[in-house]
Image (cartoon, rainbow, N blue to C red; front, side, top):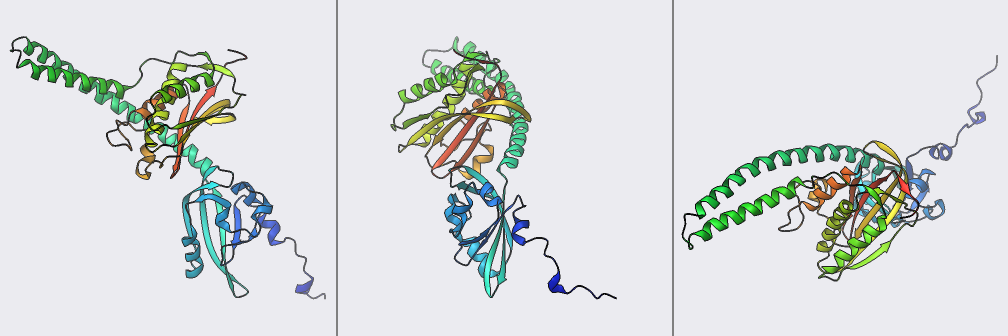
Length: 363
């Protein structure tokens, strides 16, 4: 009768390092100085950095910006407590902004404490979910505004007409009061018309997107009290394609004006274009999509209005109407496109996505 095989003769099928390299989650181990002493293969993809640069590197130096900071990492080590942090805003080493879910788990090895980090990139999934939610909210908000606007316009018309009739029976001194009523009624009507936004469908034609961006830049520079500097970075591979140049110009100008107003003390605005392949908008995959970025180095958008930024009457500026971004989003929607925003202190980036369907070789 053969006895059990000795423990020492058992074949080790897998090494821990081999298994960790099969994971799509980035796994790192930090020492008490927060230096990286182990990382798996997924770290390079999740954090957009080469494996060579990951070795023996201070963890926080992997980022241009990381909302996480040292304190939670050191607290996990000192208190020897595991916890998770969601929606960590970061700027990767290559300048790409992304959101991360981070799970911190301290462990002891050879009488030393280490910190195990599991990192998942959630930006893409979050963007898709956020786009769907915002799309429904945008439609609901616009329907509400349209109903309210029509309810306001009817009594305004009656109020203005009554003031005009009354004016004919008053003395010249008293007419200034009816004229004030008429002027304020006209002002409210214009505000309501702006709330309703553009009513005509896009008049699509073959046009050059970069010519539209250049016109916006020229218009913005005509009224530029803070002497904001404009920079361009265009992708020459974007073809001439069908869109309404007037409506896209208006949408882009609204965003550029906002960026100028955020740079009261001066700064720079980068107008950038890129072509995206197999990009999904509103649940539909497009072979080609033009992405126009408006990037400024201002103070950033307040956190309390980021999720409602495209709602009517929401503004981060004192006295702002909060309609510019709402109208811009509506104009992109009419083209089957979308506007997205990323912002943190010192950097605000609006991206206009415009599907490319019919193209033309030359304009």
